[in-house]
Image (cartoon, rainbow, N blue to C red; front, side, top):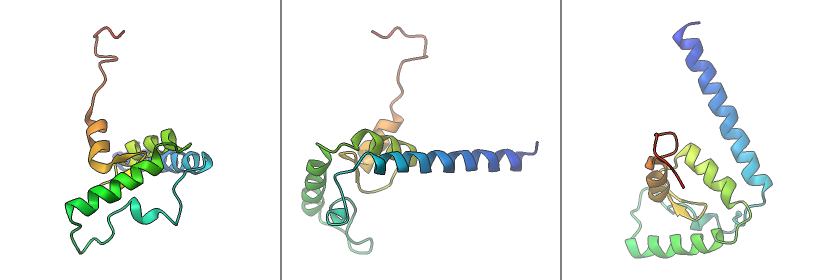
Length: 113
């Protein structure tokens, strides 16, 4: 098996996993929809958003996420895709990056209660 065929197989597996995560997220009935989509992403990529406006927008998005039945599925999708912007499962992209950098001591030989 060549390196290229291995990479292709891995890419296809990742694509299928991403699709399955997205389908699970939508099947869980997310609280966000087209009417609230503007709260979950930066409004204009070419115009910087003032910090106070961003914080207010993100806080409003997080309130919608709090009781969302799809929150766990959304977080799984976000941890897999590692978004660079927006609010996912009640977390900003930078908070998701921080979570994905966290390493659990499980499997490291340390005892876990």
